[in-house]
Length: 324
Image (cartoon, rainbow, N blue to C red; front, side):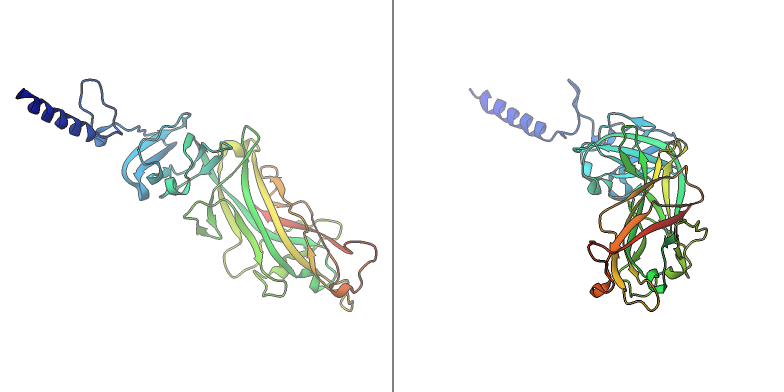
């Protein structure tokens, strides 16, 4: 009977020791668990690689993956703390475990990757890539007098890659107007002007052309005393060669109108009335290229000169011009 307290104490000690085992470490049968710092992480010296760090800002241990990882397993317990680097000259396609199995195309460094992208990773594919430019060249539309050159609103662009399943994924921006983009971004605003009567941005009136029936080739960039309105994207070499890169153009524009210098039909509300966009094949486009015509509609202010029996008496087509 005196042995019972001793056995009871040994049992408590055994339970306490078991509670201190790191649950993250698999324990081989009959052996003590390895400290997490001694667990071998995947590594590679291949140039087409992604590096995943244990902590934000590339701290802690690092796991390295090359080429294709079809079934990704997190190398570290805290998924939200990881940071990530893509090797220079490459992009990584990261598929997430969300409702749509979304694909993120990324490049460069992501110091807080796990906190920004909080869905779990399913797979990673790394491919060679290079930089491709899209610059804004101007607008063309029917011009009657200088009032018709007043423009407001925004034009946004993305470079999209058409994936094998027919969906599109946005290519990352690496430089905007000569400034390196330090955080993940895939859409650029190449034109922005809040109001018609505001100060002209980048000498805009010098780059709004009278298109008439023919669309001009605008073979110069917007005049400015600062860097050109140019965005640089990182794009898959393979996708570019196979014609799977597209420029997406999304305008939200309002223009003014006046049929002549002495006319009283001035309009300040000729607007693209519905959400619209255009997809332009980047490979097939020339050095200078333009969007499809976007239709803006409106009426004269105070209904002066408005045509009767129609919803909109002023209709203008606007094309947006770019260069590579």
